[in-house]
Image (cartoon, rainbow, N blue to C red; front, side):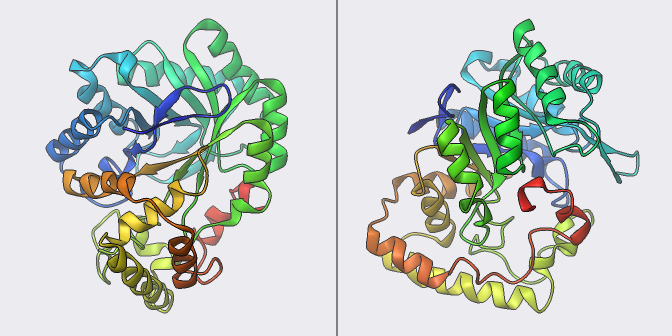
Amino acid sequence: MLMRSLGAKGPEISALGLGCMGMSDLYGPADRQESLATIHAALDAGINLLDTGDFYGMGHNEMLIGEALGTVDRDSVALSVKFGAQRGPDGAWLGFDSRPQAVKSALAYTLKRLGVDHIDIYRPARLDPAVPIEETIGAIADLVQAGYVRHIGLSEVGAETIRRAHAVHPIADLQIEYSLISRGMEDDILPACRELGVGITAYGVLSRGLISGHWKPGDADAAGDFRSHSPRFQLGNLERNLELVEALRGVAASRGVTVAQIAIAWVLAQGPEIVPVIGARRRDRLGEALGALDVALSPEDLAAIETAAPRDAVAGERYAPAQMAMLDSER
């Protein structure tokens, strides 16, 4: 497994991470046994970064990972956990809470659900507009001092917030959506991270399956799949976006690889500080993603990929308007 450093002061982690959200929430029903088998397959392949959030399935995802790690050496795994998103018993999103006391309470429950004594990277899921980022990071820094957290991360925040947070405590990485069709962070956020030595864990590298090469209309019809309401998957936008996928398919075919592999390889090629987090829920999809590590892209390949999927060609925003308004990274 290729390894990359997560920021200037972060841990050494695998060049691909496994995002576990879809095993519990938001993408429709998941198979529990297949989810556990996929986590084990990822670890066996050398992936050591597992990403979750305490609000994924209202704790279900953490408990699932905790079960998977029951026979695994704790120190061989880097656990990345997001906190702060508030949900009701019906699954409704209620806002964010990143007050210092809430940070420490959330961590206590996370440690119990995961069955571990520390978290490797702990991060607020979004910027809480009611709490200065300095207070939130200061609370996590207290947890670092106490040994409950090893490194501090951020998620979906802009360059100014990154600088303010980094002034309180070194930030290991920023988790942010980044793919061939989600490239907004390249303008200000990525340069700021490079300047400060902050790594990038890129989620959504296949745009939630949209540019995987496997997506077809109707795939989001299952109950609980938020993509049924996501702008890029709506009729009118979806057809235009799938045209980009077909153009990418031609580039991938010329290299003898899949669309998903060419899309993941493109993200890997954008810099050694960028680690794609793959949201595979099945072993076959995980195996396909791992194949991207063997895809070396030439300058000609990169040019062909960007011709097939130009930066601003995507139709539709990343999220619905209410969710976009919560993203400090989009301001």
